[in-house]
Image (cartoon, rainbow, N blue to C red; front, side, top):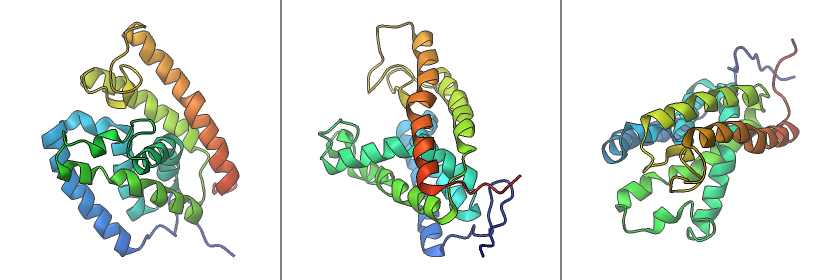
Length: 209
């Protein structure tokens, strides 16, 4: 019989091993001041950076809703990044900067967190199950983060691709119209299919009402 008391997404199986929690925490502590100095605070609005911090919280609290949100919203892109990295950045170009001398080696080394986020998220899903409330919660989070990114960051940085798909801002649509369409399509094209897949693979860990 499983003894998993779920309250607000936090389980009695919350404690992840120290051999993971401590190095992960130290890595984030080292990353934050470097990224702040090199990229500025707006860089932390990237969904992948939000996932990095969220997983840190989950490692210490076991918050199933939070890591389920990251699995729905960030895991697909992180897996594409990993595949592109293994292909030398030549597949879709998402990880191409990892092979460019334009960026110092220490900065590229810090970006390796994209490689270990997917297996940690999958381990959490296997260990605690998937919480289907992640779909509306991640959608709500995206609808907060995307306008904030549009307002607070530069088109030159194109954080979260709020100014256009890929590295450069798009020139075909009114910027606000593009943002609105992006906010509409992201949950439909990415979150919803991922939600269905995770629910099928990992089931629902929600307690009965």
